[in-house]
Image (cartoon, rainbow, N blue to C red; front, side, top):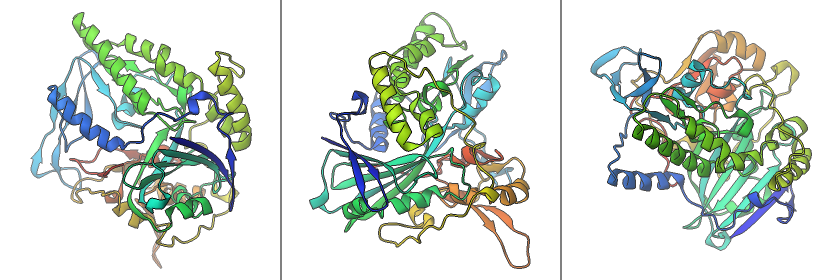
Amino acid sequence: KEDNFYILGPAGKIRIPNWPMPPLMNNHGNYIVSMANVCRWMAQVAEGLGVEIFPGMACSQLVYGDKGEVVGVVAGEMGLAADGTPGPAYEPGMELRGKYVFLSEGVRGSLAKEVIAKYDLSKGHCPQKFGIGMKEIWEIDPAKHRLGTVTHTMGWPLGGNAGGGSFIYHLENNQVYVGFVVHLNYKNPYLYPYMEFQRFKHHPMVAELLKGGKRVAYGARAISEGGWQSIPKMVAPGVALLGCTAGLVNVPRIKGNHNAMLSGKAAAEAAFAAIGAGRSGDELADYEAEVRGGAIGRDLKKVRNVKPLWSKFGLVASLMLGGADMWANTFGLTVLGTLKHGKTDAAATGKAKDFQPIDYPRPDGVLSFDRLTNVAFSFTNHDEGQPAHLRLKDPSIPIAVNLPEYAEPAQRYCPAGVYEVIAEEGKAPRFQINFQNCVHCKTCDIKDPSQNIVWTTPMGGGGPNYPNM
């Protein structure tokens, strides 16, 4: 019902009028919904149509055919001991095979990473860029609730340290979604995205809205931000990449659900036609053509320069140049062409010696909270007896390389307190992984400067259980 855009300072705000905004930034007529609840509803509809859904397990491996094509996945391996060996209750996973396999794992999917590398699908495309999005659900004073109000902010507290911004959506039952996004191409390894989010809630505008309310849920997830330039080739023999797995988020709108749905429909129609023609295991070229030449491509092309402009010139310049470029593209004009993204977010991380630590205020337990307290509100659970799903390629790197070079940023970029450097008197520091806390955001897999952390699917249905998220 109402759109508000603000640039924040430490104690004040400047509202950006709606009239200079390109039409694509208009949210009027959209619905504020919980995607977790939409997916639960959609699962019931799908099952009513005969779709089989396997809850409580993840697809952990790909199955390849004789010609190197993807022919299926392995799901449901259970009973592995902590060291990865089969325990007394071990059950091997089952192979689920199909004429085509669609990977819709969300951002930085573990199987999609394998497919992209195996078939070199990123060749000729910019590296994917990412942000970390954190979100809390708050129940607020009914007198302050404005159903259908959408607020976005930029600026404080991030300043020049990082790009990013916030969203506040008023949904039903006197609840609001309070979200905060930090672009993961930040340089300062001392930056602490979670604490930037907690600090944001102390801005007078936000604090006044939340005063007298209570936080009821928390979650975090990486967001693909590369846009048009970073979409890899989306098909390989027998397999297609869908939604955020391919990186179809419209960055200035912070929205990707619409394109994820459209990509699913396009992939289904391409596969239906191919199977009807007696094909299987080949590349669904019609799917890729529809994504790039259809509604998704048109949506992403218009905003393709916003992210690289922000990364190169900062907030103010990107607002002006990016806004002008979006307006031009709205009328089919190309002023700046297609700008390139630079290095990966991991490679963008600077050396600790070139930066100063950032002194963050201690959470007050009213508006702001420590990570472990908030993780409890993500309702995350993993069986402690299973192998850690967060793996190190080289266990020595966190202490031998990342600690002296980068002050081991895993201690800070993780929004769930998974990674710790334990320094006990008289002993060498050691790196500890508390995988039970993991909320499956994938930030570690993306931002680790040594690219030493590999996120894999946990055994069973472990992970966060998001109510109303």
